[in-house]
Image (cartoon, rainbow, N blue to C red; front, top):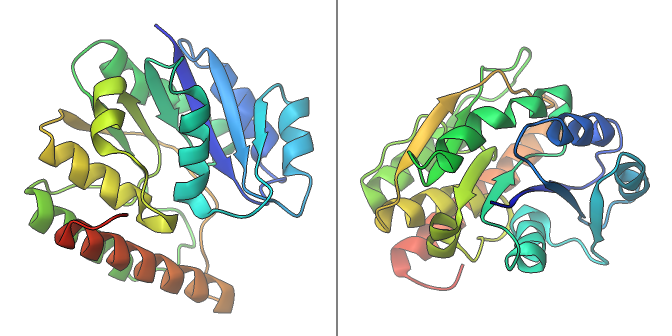
Length: 226
């Protein structure tokens, strides 16, 4: 059984090496592929130095596009894919909690639930929209509708891809997997990534996320190309 971790990364130089080291240490993960989404820093060089395979994109495709490029490059070889954000640092080592139920055959897709990060400045609008939209479109009500930390077997990713663009990727994965009858398990973890603060950049990020999540839900509802 081949297990490949896909790590989309854009300007994650500060944490990418620690994330890769932790992912490599997870029993069962055979390969770690970083998809460098046209970073302007040295994310790609640091990822190579840390022992990851690197797929360097010439133009920024956003999270969903980067994941699709990564999946396209490994799909023929992977039995299970593990999706990890580039800023998890050493907490990426908990990916084994996601992998075990899928490798053991008790789930088709697992989703990490994360503790609320200290200093998080969000008020829950994006998460509320995502949770309500997923339930309305699939009947499944997730605890962690926006979690990007997941493991999927071939049946699940075949049913749930191509990945939706941008930050709509997670809601689309969940809706499509649930509609296809995949067994979904949400797994408590202590994973942690960089929190988005209550500043102009933070609110701008959440605004983009809201728009892209809403767009993905609308396209799923209309049945149009994601």
